[in-house]
Length: 231
Figure 1 (cartoon, rainbow, N blue to C red):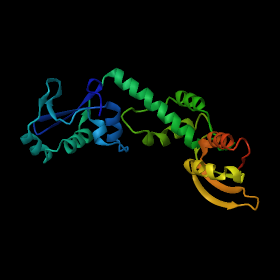
Figure 2: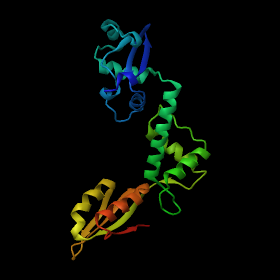
Figure 3: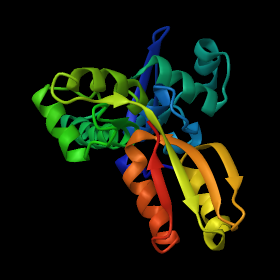
Figure 4: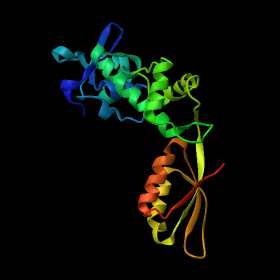
């Protein structure tokens, strides 16, 4: 659960009654946006308050009247989705900075320069976002802001969300160990074993992961891997 001292209030007013819960501001935002976050990880305490500052609990009668349940987790879900999350200007700025980093990281992972088929470094993406005056909303999910951001910075750098196919050849000595690593990066499209025991496969991976993919395989095979970007 969330540290109570770091929690903020999520509030919903309905039928003349006020309901408050203590939540992690960023996790509550992600949860509200539909991200895969458990409600138990969002709330600081399993209590619904009439006034959280005074620790004045909401009555079960009022909870039934408004939510038709007294289950705290169900009520918390409705408060987060239908109510408002109270954050300070400082908290909002910190959340925005963190979400901006997450957006940059995901774009760097998934996008490439379509002219070279190579990934863009995070700093280049960040610079393009600054030049395009991209605003990242701390209360929206990272996923929902990827496409609009890429569209905005397209005026500054050539960029496209794209998967690439890479042909890989690994000596039989390392094939077993490398196989699980390859599956973590992307989807295996084709594979076969050579007469000398080496393994050959075609792997589809997010375009921005190319450098990391090559480094991982090179280190695992002591440089004996062969790769080729498919056109």
